[in-house]
Image (tube, rainbow, N blue to C red; front, side, top):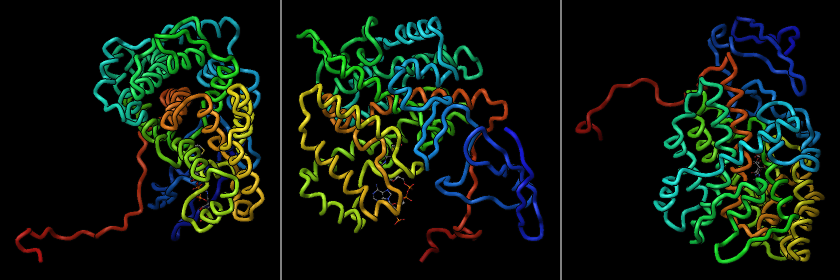
Length: 429
Ligand code: CMC
């Protein structure tokens, strides 16, 4: 981080010098840490549209250019040339692994995939119709009740074990959430399968039949995991960091991230996007739907992004995956895919979307792809959570390992009642 001459802010009769910090890419930041002490004023930025909440070396996004880099590597290169576990290693450690490092990492993750036998009883407490994200939020938080030996956040080795456990156990928990909802027996992990294949098997295998999965679907699943692995300081990642800033254990922090991801403006959008395509149903209904968006009756789900004011680079890869999965499952003529392509084409030419810089995001095509793979809509956000776990835990570790780390404690612009005296109930009108 280099510095340039300071920014000057005038507050009342005081002129305050604020250092300007430069990153390796992206906008400079004005360091306002001393502003309150020197001026008695806070800054105001609800929604954090102009606020960098931390320093990070993990992920870089240029929203205007549609660029997403993990540790410097473009997302499309990782999606086409890497695999999810290698991307996990990269996010956690900062560099691509050597062959020996990769082998060790893969074997470690594989050996941690099983859950404590008593953990399975936890699922029985949920109603069968529970949303799997409700199960995920509870179950992942409950990991802290099972793995006491990796809860000391000040011990680097324990932090690493927790990271490995979370990456390894998330597919097992997610698959159990799915199996529970459809009333099928749990399928245990199998160590000779890849991460993605193992997950698909735990979701779709049944004891009565042999399970064979199309390699095209394994590849697509792995690529979907890569596309969702990290996305710098989004709402759920910031939630994980804020929860972790108090010293909470990593399992509790990731459970907080899952809760945040559930919302329809964030991870829940893929579920909403597919529901929207189903409601539109046929290309002829698109003009009527677009008119409703312009009247602000609803949003075009899977479009728009706080950071990307260009095509989301993940959406391009996801569109390719959608083609591959639909071809592999014999659904090339899926009517929803036709609606999606037509809707995208119409929106990209429409002034309403052009002037607001609204482009497809990763969720626009992910629902169609996941649905073709056999997942119900309620599982979409669960898959996002599974994949994002590595990003959350990498960001959490980076924060804990930052010597300047402080508890997150925003301030506020108070507009409520000024001080007044309490009136007893008997004297209130
Ligand atoms: N459909 C219609 N209008 C939209 C949309 C949309 N999807 N997104 C933004 N707008 C409009 C919005 O109404 C506003 O218009 P105006 O200036 O006339 O009031 C303008 O565009 C700017 O929107 P904003 O709400 O200020 O933008 P934001 O940065 O606060 O919101 C967003 C970003 C992702 C919440 C929003 O674009 C959205 O709700 N999109 C649909 C949900 C979605 O697809 N979310 C997935 C995001 S990618 C996965 C993830 O990271 O979680």
